[in-house]
Each structure stands twice: as C-alpha cells, then as structure tokens.
Image (tube, rainbow, N blue to C red; front, side):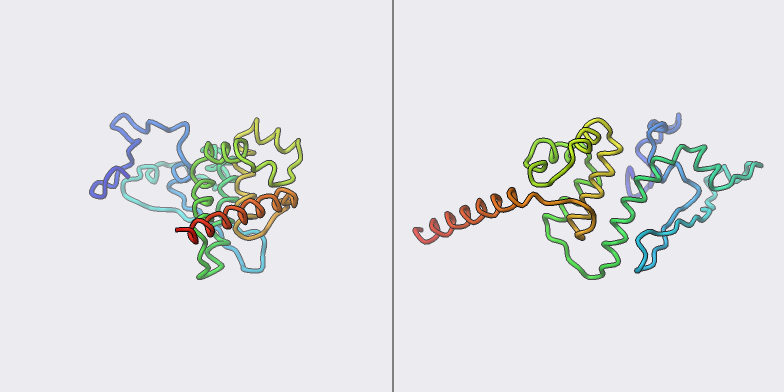
Length: 196
C-alpha cells in the first residue's frame, strides 16, 4: 500500500496497472478470495472460494458469469496456484503448531524463502549448501535452469528445516566437520574470555 490514508496500490496509476503482466496471485483472483481448509491429520488441504463484493469493483456489473475454473484459466493463475499452495502449506503448518517459537535463524530463512528467490539462489550455489545435503545432480541442474523449480525446491527445503518433513538427506561428513568447526570456534572464544 502506498500509504495508510489512501490504501492504494503503488503500481496502479490513472492509466491502469503498471505491473499487470506480472501481477501477484491476489490480484489475479480478485474479486474472488481463496482459502485452504486443512484437517490436522491430513497432509493436504482443500481449497475453497468466496466472492468479494465491493462497490469499487465494476466487474460485478458485467453480464457474464464465470466458473472458478474459467476465471483461474483466464487470469493465468495456474503456476501461481501451484507454488502458492506449497507456500500456504508451510504457513498452515506453522500456525497449527500453536505457540511454538521459531529461532531468529529459522525466521530469517523463512523470510528469505518467502520473499527473495535471488538470495536463496546465492545461498544454495555460493555457500556450503550443496555439500551439506545429498542432492542428486539432476535436481541441481533443474533448479539452476528453472526458477519455478528453484522456488518449489526452496519451499520443500523450508519444510524440512522448520518441521523435519521431506526427503532431504544431510551429508553426515559435512555435518561432523561443521560441528568440529563450531566446537573449535567456541573453544577459542572461551579461551579469549578466560585470558581477558
């Protein structure tokens, strides 16, 4: 929103939407609202839809009636839906855990995956990430070449990191080396405190 008083989108000008081709899923669905209903013992949720009736939406004055499937196809929301469902699964899982507090590092990872794919790409390909996990070369090639696959991968990894779900395999040798390094660094800090 541009400001609290006007509640206007910064991308909407008198000439119309300046990011229409790349508009987010919320804009593609409007005036339809979507939610996911999930039972605690089920792995996936069920989508449900509601019509949002607001006076400023002139689309309600149109004669044509749309089904949800027709609207989704017309708005090009299929890829957005697929990725959004993966992200919503992470959010719903976090909410169903109740009062669990995530560490600052976990929250930092959550925000990176949720909002900055470029940072996540650097995290994967420019750090020790690929040494820390046993990831098939085919998967590495796919996520290097396809942003949607990288985004799906990031959400799968986030579920593994936050909830221990998924098929990621930690490289035990890399984990042991990381623990040794942390222990050595901790020992050095303790020695420095003792000397000071």
